[in-house]
Amino acid sequence: MRIAALRGRETFEVEEAPVPSIRPDEVLVRVAVSGVCASELEPWLTGPPAGEVRYPGHEVSGVVAEIGAEVTAPAVGDRVGVWVTERGFAEYVAVPAAYCFPAGDGPLDEALAEPIACSVNAVEAAGARLGDDVVVIGAGFMGNLVQRLAALRGPRHLIVADTRADALERAARLGATRTVDVTKESLPDIVRSLTGGLGADITFECTGTQGALTMCGDTTRMSGTIALVGFHQGADRTIPLAYWNWMAFTIVNAHFRDLAVIMRGMSAGMRLLAGGVLSMDGLVSHRFPLEEINAAFATLREKPDGFVKAVVTFPDV
Image (cartoon, rainbow, N blue to C red; front, side, top):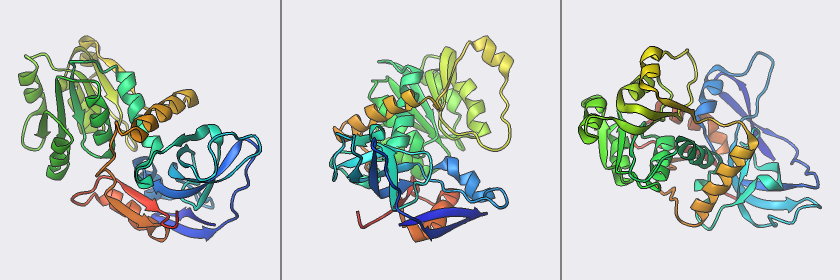
């Protein structure tokens, strides 16, 4: 099979490797698509340590090609989203059967179970309730997912902020009750005007940037919740902790490492997707074959107009 190996700065090389063998409790999945995740951008930019080779890729969907002797479900031919932690930019992955979830009948290149699970868990951990005033800072792929899932909780206001006109137009199409271009308008002022001066019940930070993190404290009401969805790579961040203490914010770290939590989010998210409750339509904007994986990562870095999500596709599936 073909697999992408990260060998240097901005340098994936496509290699030949044996198709993985499976244990009795595992299945072999023929990969249809592997998402390009922002958490893998910095490793691509810097490259692995000298002398090391890395095999990233963890947002995988595909079709079951083989099952182990102890597996009763899924069956060969089933379309699934799967949980893997590496080696996802490959034609095949071996994965425990318990880590596979039905993908429904929609496009497999939109059945990205892992980021859907992250967003489900973020919204659930933040405790969004009927009638809440919700702010989403960041209208990229994860922000769009959080927005769609938060909308299922029945908020009064669902305010989405970003710096990009195309992203805000998309957020409006997805049902935001108000969009805010933070280069032209004051998000805290708009939130206060819509909430009787109180601020948001929940603010989701979905960019991983210092500016958005700072803004969370200015948009959230006393005893409200700040959920950190963005992946904060690179330099240390700072917050006015004395003020945050005084405001009695609940801080939710919406990054999850406990496997049971990840599996719960993946199960719930894929049920919503397969059942047609959650739509991923329009959220995968750029598709690349495996041979162009470096271009996929460069597109994530550059974020051209209309960019939402890049994926690597395997069209034979």
